Amino acid sequence: MILVTGGTGLVGSHLLFKLISNNENVRATYRREKTLKRVKHVFTYFSDDAENLFNKIEWIEADINDIPKLQNAFKGITYVYHCAAFVSFEPDKYKTLRKINIKGTANIVNLCISNKISKLCYVSSIAAIGHHNNPEKLIDEETAWNPEEDNSVYAITKYGAELEVWRGTQEGLDAVIVNPGIILGAGYWNGGSSGNLFKQIYKGMRYYVNGITGYIDVWDVVNAMHQLMESDIKNESFVLVSESLSFKTFQTKTANALHVKPPTIEAKSWLLKIAWRLDWLQHKFFGKRRNLSKQTAKSAVSITKYDNSKLKNALEFQFKSIDTSIKEITELFLKDLKQ
Image (cartoon, rainbow, N blue to C red; front, side, top):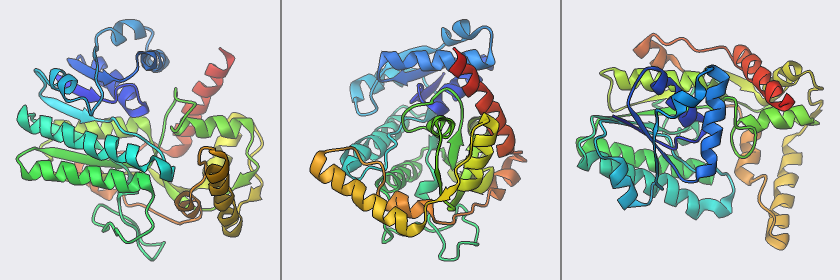
């Protein structure tokens, strides 16, 4: 049997659909019952038999820091996909990020070892990979992480979680790590997922930034994870990026697909420096949630380009174009909008 942690998230829900469609026996964890309806909704995008497919999943309520419940979730499990995580770039959420991303991953690794799990796949992030001083030099799996850099709190905890997985491999656990870029997928139009980007662009965005980063379709993430788990590959990490695009390019392509006006005003570096300081002041004096940190403001104008050749060579993997991804996702967004 296969265990999927974080089954109600963007990656988890799409992964569950693939596994169930392949007639795999699957158990998945969730923290809040109300989030299960999002998984059902994702299933309706791809099947007329969504309810029946959903009911084939063995769901178990379990927080990844609740050891007794996790122990029950691991009974009879052979393979584990660890998708559960907390995504936030708010500096004041650092303790929560550490608890979920690092401590929670350590719990999963420990249970994998004690239950003699055949293989673990951990969903990390390109945020946990280092960067080059030369922005034109491609970033790959060997690019060293620099702890002295002004890294975001999210990046720090995802890197820390990776260390727990590598520690597990030293204790006999077979594992693979995937480092996806910005994951594009449908069904999660609110909150911290990329779906909110589509929603915000549809509502109208005046400003754009010229920073460059990596993007990937959620199905490419799921297919890469599944193929890696089915392969003999172990104790390796893989950058999952289909294309490196500027934020402006992505915003413009998405706006055009949504038939709305693209952003026209560039948010220059100096403007972002003012914005994150004002954001900090509003948080400090009025208790408002952080929307823009120093690190996210910096990344918005940074040029980071990624090398995806390791996965291509290892699996002869073909990535979906971001144009195709945007087209498919915007169609589902507009369909949901009408309902």
